[in-house]
Image (cartoon, rainbow, N blue to C red; front, top):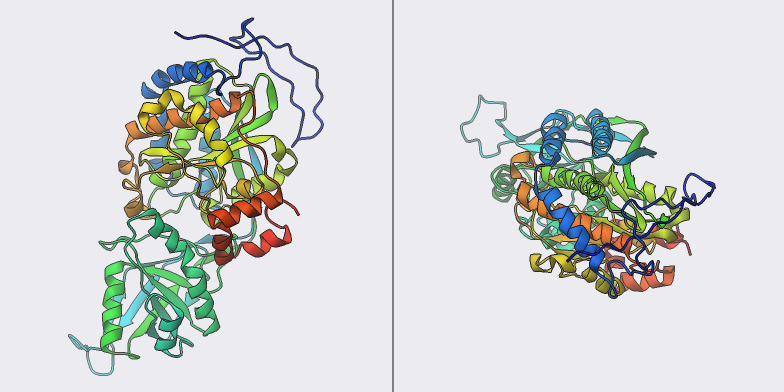
Length: 528
């Protein structure tokens, strides 16, 4: 039932013209035949290549493999991997070794992270205004609050207590109702996060609140945790790799609710002592890890399959995003093991700096700007192990048919239902701003949100069978797009990208998050 369609192509003597946009020579296809060279690969006219590859990938990925051990080493032995930290350097070494063990060519690409950051010994104490179990006269009973600093927050040391101001959910009306916030620590409420929309709001709400806090002269912001059971987690509200404007911490939800009750019972009388001796360092060189399987016909054109290697460090970064790092390496190993080559090159990129605002992928795009016309698609996985239902295509309706054709052999898996939304959320962002077709895996929430960026994000949360199924989907997607005779979709012009932004609402997200000015000036995204 299988048919081979590859053909022999002789090696052509091209010379490399530059390190970024070299015209690579085609390579000989080891399974080449004399069959018709006009075969359309994974597209409407001829889908046999995708069926052939899917049949070969399944037993390779679903059988014994190094993926589980790779992930164990990354999470249990290296652990949390903050960009710029020694653990991140170890993760880069691990990734290079894992690609090499898979038989895949690999190199690293350097860029500069503006600053390094690590948390000091965060302590928050509140003075109990109720006088319950009153200490000796003339002193104040201090109650500890379980809390962590937000990432890239500036340090703060309070020798004298500051008053707490409860500003509710931080709307203009609630700030006005709270009165003057000058010199105060602000308590901001949150809802418990249970959906993808809730998670996006954890990033879309803070910018306006931070602006109000800074304008009012607040000393610090204390965010109520959006997870229950005293679970601590870490985000950053600085999305450019720079230290944030105002000290911020996240308090365990139950402790923050206690604070809110005290503030309601004793308005203007709750004292807070907040100490965050965070450690700030200067610029540091960081690396993206790039594996590559060269195409046999158009090796200078490429499809990128990527995930981010960095993580926060309260947990060990298993769901976000260690499992998908292991997926990328396993997809590369499996494709290599099939012995089949696609027409175009597949690059397997592990980005750093994602948690600081997709810094690593932004730097990759800048470094490879001269060759973006030949990047045929960028595919990324960044949502744990919830079942894959398809891809978010970033507003690109023109690419859906091609993606559906590639995934036809896995139609029964329910992973061929695609959406057209676009967002800032992960490493596809700067490729999208450059007009490159992007695919972000749409996944069910599963156990991702309760453990997101949290101390509970550990290896035991990973369903390895589900991860293997995702690996097959990812590998087939990358291979199929790379093997199509025609490109999946064109690179959009700047005006077409702007139309796409308006249609999807990405423009409003960018304005909220502070990206819009960089887009308008041409500093970020496709040049005017």
